[in-house]
Length: 291
Figure 1 (cartoon, rainbow, N blue to C red):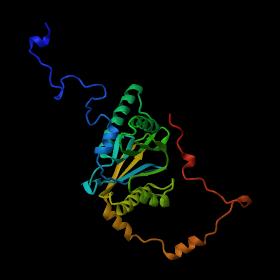
Figure 2 (cartoon, one colour):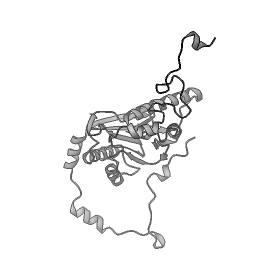
Figure 3 (cartoon, helix red, strand yellow):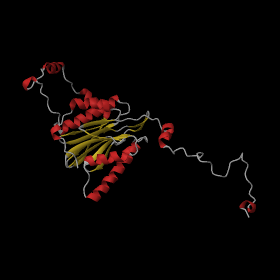
Figure 4 (tube, one colour):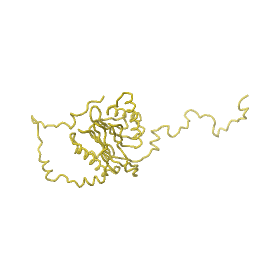
């Protein structure tokens, strides 16, 4: 006997909802099945910015950042920490979405710890940068927003790498990331040299971030300063950005006599009439390719 005869079941009206499965292609999919399309339609349109910088010099690597976390026109937190330690000899600046930065740094800390347990030693700064780059490149196109400058000291000496959420990985001496980076680069390019002293490096980093916070609406709060040495990283100071900028404005600038003297210095030519070109600072001290 058929089941419909036992249960007194009647075929439903075709105009009503059918209890049978829909035909192929008629599935009702949830709104998140295509993450990229979903985020383009329903994702937030909130502007955010920051100012972070890092540079390598004779005595290590300097990392500095402002402390303002913004969400559109709203200042979410005026005293956030944008320089995150990874281990005793490695830290990184964070720029982008705060949640993405915090999550991926926790992932990086875990992976480096696992490698240290397996291999008996921590990877080099270059190895950590490549690892982070490969992990984030798998999520390319899914609105992952993170840019970081990894600052560390390994067997080859001080090292600095820039890593972006699309998998970009670059090595260099100076990096500035965030909406205030054009203003910070203007200060760094005029005052940076590889052989500067530690106090000169501190003053340059503070000055660059302070000027950027004055010009960039999404940067502000305070200026955090870190120094990575051979013995490990050190938290140097936190200064109020506006107080620091006000003090910098009171410092005397170059007078007209000094400017005229600089303009009057002739270009010196090397032997054979060719202009002498000084080597770029730090070129002879670039660390060897990390293993």
